[in-house]
Image (cartoon, rainbow, N blue to C red; front, side):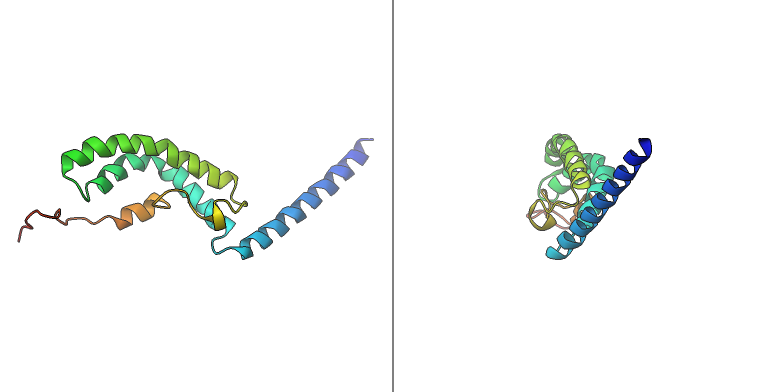
Length: 132
């Protein structure tokens, strides 16, 4: 009796594996960004989400003075920490589903790695004198 159940389970597992592998191949070739890019983005966001507390004040400081950046950016960072963590978990758990459209992303920057790369360091604010 147990042996029959094992055969049925084994057959069911093989069918599920074949169906999932086929879905990955079909979905992966149908869109510009694939499921594994979405998975990698999700893992990256799950690892780096606490850095929103640093990134948001730095990003806000690109267009504002330091006090505005600190007092506005830190609270914004606290808001974005759970957002980035939840989106990372979503991307990891649903990496094989092409949502958002074409495995796109929900927030800018896609990961904080791109966010930190896009910041301009050492430049003066518009309207202020640059030291020579």
